[in-house]
Length: 114
Length: 115
Image (cartoon, rainbow over all chains, first blue to last red):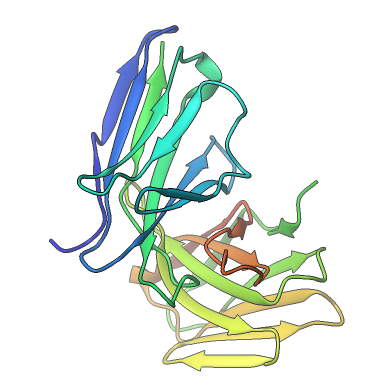
């Protein structure tokens, strides 16, 4: 499967714990995006990364959330000290250079905070 | 403030008939619009897009119409098939600095196509 791979598919955390969500883009894609979908809502942009660079983080909450896309390995979305309001589906997408308008999404990680 | 609005949460259509999904937007700076389709437990899949310099784009059974003066776009599916049953998201972007991946999504319309 050469699509965008996200893991885990489901993640359960207790309040105050850390959540780490991983995303491997499609082969040949150098741009990664993270989106969040709250219940009954549309997807909301969080952050746009290229290898070792954060290009646009205008949608990231100011505290507890961080993202990286290292030179080697998957992109990581990290949420520290999770709260119940962080429960959502987190989608990663990737696009090839020069075609940033066409996003290919992964199947998402469903985060549940108890 | 919602910049992209899909006012119909759901739509039910008979197989073989036309499905029309609507989307309104408020930001006149949007210059690129997309439709995504989403099945349960899967990520959204790109369906069709349109640039603001056009008023229509067609791809097989799917046609997107853009009315800039009304800030309205619609997706037509004809003929509708049961496999089209999914949630359809309208999305828009502003092309500046190459950040076209920053898409503004509507809340989605759940389409049910009945055999």
